[in-house]
Length: 137
Image 1 (spheres, one colour):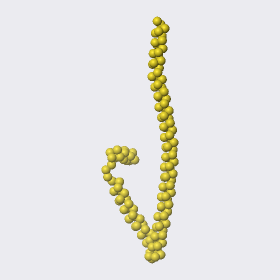
Image 2 (cartoon, rainbow, N blue to C red):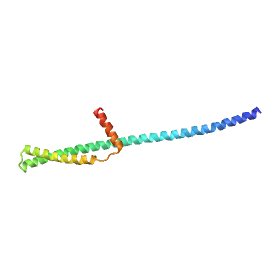
Image 3 (cartoon, one colour):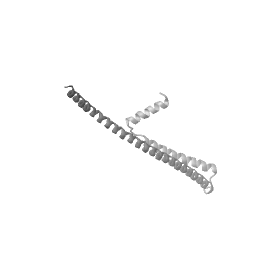
Image 4 (cartoon, one colour):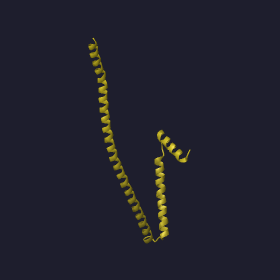
């Protein structure tokens, strides 16, 4: 009688062990898949980081070249005003300053209008929090 009850206990222990074994295998499989996913995501993030850095560097170079072109254009305009229109150098420089101020005012006005408007509550909360942190309240 003890043998049959012993066999029953052995089967029961095996039955109890099967769900734990299956759960352990599933957990191992999920962990393996997640590790693979994390490795792939990190590789993609590295690739994206390199792409974004290269893009920012190229945009910076393009903006620097644009600034140089604008300066060269203003110098050429000043030389044109002096040689062909007969203006003095001071008059040409002041004319360019006025022209730059007018363009700056127009751009600031348009930019101000574009940034006005309804903001999402989360955006307003973030702006308020940032402003308070900067002001020190």
